[in-house]
Amino acid sequence: MIILIQYLQDQFHLSKSDAEEIEGAFERRSLKKNHYFLRSGDRCREIAFVHQGVMRNYYIDQDGHEVINYMTSDGDFNTVYSAFIDQSSCNENIKTVTDCELSVIDYTTFFKLKAESESFARIVDKLVAAGLECKEMRLRSYLNEDAQKRYEHLLQNQPKIVQFSPLHYIASYIGVSRETLSRIRNRKIANI
Image 1 (tube, rainbow, N blue to C red):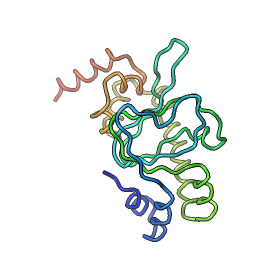
Image 2: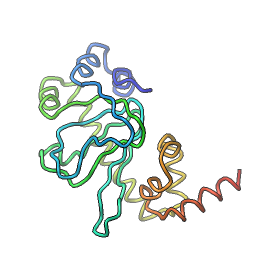
Image 3: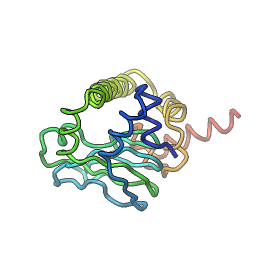
Image 4: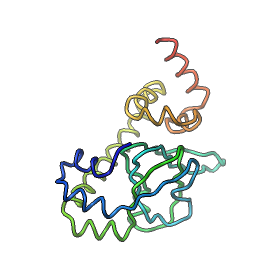
């Protein structure tokens, strides 16, 4: 389990007092497996830090299929940032894949803390930049890498997602069919 205060100190080199101030603005929450953190159509009012567990962000396409566009596990933040910023209704869902332990900050508290804490403002800037970089890397991956490489990247960088998510979630997340992912995994096992 990754603890928020330790994460803040390790990742952003905050003093204990700055980390405690930021952590104090978050509320602890436990969500059971298959529970919604955010439903499509609702206003996005919160950001979650995942202490433990796996979550998925998805939408339903025009054919009624679930498309997973983001997954998080221990030590990740999760929200639909654009909907959070403008407080609009969201067109995607965030749902737990496993039981999750979270720290959650609401919109009002987030912006109050950002205005009052220089440390938190720097963290937000770094997290937004990292989120944009992640999206760009994912887009480049879809354009330039085959399914095998996308799976290997996920396995290397987010092993908990691979370990605890059903095959069809992983397949959707890396943009392949379940059958293709099964072949990739079988080849990988055969090469061990």
